[in-house]
Length: 339
Image (cartoon, rainbow, N blue to C red; front, side):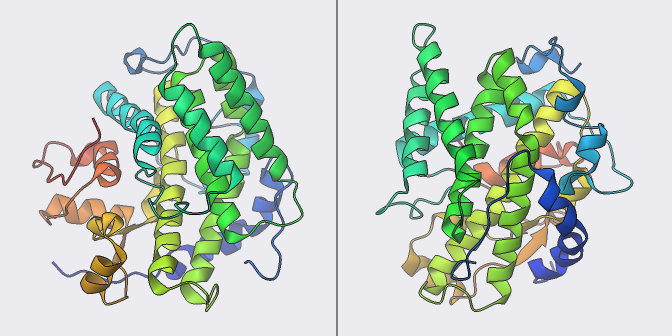
């Protein structure tokens, strides 16, 4: 196979430039400022969907959502998934919460990111995730009360005077996890509130994507080693992908179709997913400090369809299962799956 090294800057620069103005207006909350030092759907999914949602809370198709960067493509391709695909993706999303508690990592949170000095928002995330993992009918009221409180704290942080690059990453990761809990295991109120925060998640996701893109092409954060720099960029790529994928799967579960396919197709994926779990020494031996080649999601699926072998973990498997056209062609070659 001819693998082409794809610069994320080339993949995203035109989109980011066109959407920069709308990013500033999309969030329901004030977007953070950066300082100079830092840079009705299938019922088989298990989600009761027969609840009224105000037009302003619709995921797709309203005039509000059309203004968002993630929905700005002029001719969106509508895509649907079958119930087995939706159930699998939702199960993997929810498994990420348990994995975060038990292993201090997930398919989009690296094990070394917050190992020694976990920020307060990450500690909040672990606390809520731990409580959620032990949720019962008897304690679910306090679990969701804690969740609401932590989300309020997270939203309030968006009004702070400055976010560092690390702040941006952990805040998006936290909101993605909170959205997973509220969208796929919450009551009607929780889901409605989660939908209300989609525009804010869109804005934060686009900001994280821009920061990671800048870091790839500029000599920023020079106090980081090449490995630490790669961990941040790869974590950002995976977090952006999961942020959009969670919204896409929920759209299919609720409405039967998703309009995010054109945007998803442009997002970059590391060809060598095994690097994610390697130690720094193993990473250096494997990459010589260069990281991994990149393919867009569309290119990744096309190569898979042609028979190219990729070692897949939970992250890559979600992407493969979510692409309905690629199912059934050949078996997966998993290195590990979440149960």
